[in-house]
Picture 1 (cartoon, rainbow over the protein chains, first blue to last red):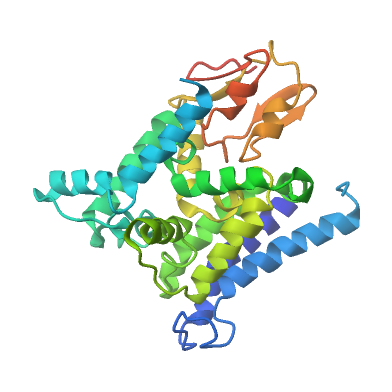
Picture 2: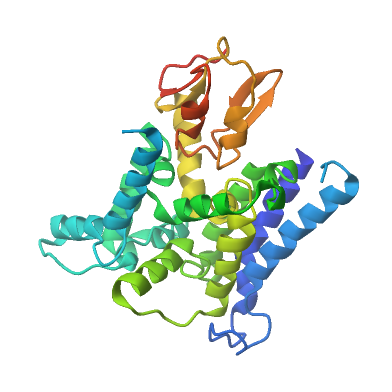
Length: 62
Length: 274
């Protein structure tokens, strides 16, 4: 249950992290700003973290 | 007509109904609502904008076609489950079929690494919360829109520049959660708020006993795991030699019922579960 809640809250952070873009001067074009694609990057990091963490714990036979 | 041909025909129908240059659904709905036959684009139908504004009360400020479409979608999900995702959405089907080109040993089975439902609903909750803080996320990270751009490129020869968020959407949708994910529907599972909303509706209507859903006959199930392996949404788990379908991410595609060697899975309202 605790893990589910943590996953839920972190996943909620994926779209919410877009708020970091507000007023950051993002034009939506790659390279025009610094780190203005936070939700996508956040999602990538989140899932990469899940993958690495579970693999290191040895729960998944690779 | 075989099951697979029917399925592909459904997705092609979805392409004709929802995507330019045809966009027949939007045109018909626009004609019924406004009395005029107009050219429509994917944005007339945008399901993400009304979803994003479900909680902040601004939903009715947006294009009536979108709001009515979302209403139709949720009513359909209430009674029949998320059939739009499983039978019509070409964006989800595109990565599902694309993933069949990559060997399975190179693909990640996300169900082994994380539970799907909390992430699916967490993403939906965050998506609905963003407008309260003045943020907008509808177009960014929309695979439906990205697929429309691809369809437009081939049908009309134009393509807009990829913005940073669309570039990331491509990577997430086509690569990470597409060809390198078992089933090819990782994006549908984790990052599609419209799909999550339909499954939430489906879950509650099933609890109330209204919904038609995929059901496993426990007496017949032999626990062979073929359904779990073939499910593109990874919605099936097998415990104690009995298959269990999660209502939180089943999209009623019917792959499980088609592959089951003993016909233990069927679509209907009557519950066979103990």
